[in-house]
Length: 169
Image 1 (cartoon, rainbow, N blue to C red):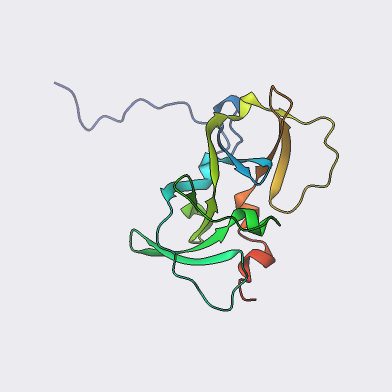
Image 2: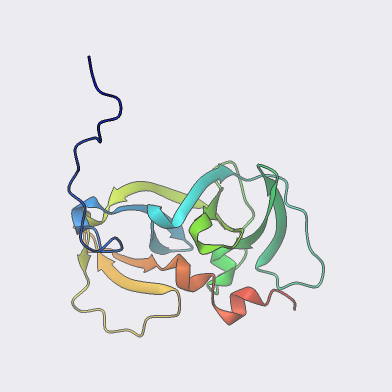
């Protein structure tokens, strides 16, 4: 008979709990915003949902679309493309809302119009010739095997930007 009070065998744990995972283990979500490609780490996204009814909030920036109710919680929704300086694009059946990880203690989501699927960061290489200044909220610039440029979003930084937090126009 098995002893239920016996401690389970210990599993190997990294010495530093917040250590970076090896690149091969990092899942990222690819998306097109305008004509640019972006990546977001799946660990920074709590949920991807279809676009729900968005209740507009008056006197806010055009990139802040309003609020939605998700599982009884209110989330502020931003048009990611418009926030990044592009033009607002109407959503359609392919559009999705990315809800930011609850670890960031902010109920926020981003509308993205063209998701390109989950990939492994190991499919990309840091761009050696990309010397451009990284804008706030972008952590790295990568290239895929076809030589296309991808910008990795750092959602933790993004949702703490002063501009992002001040939605009033």
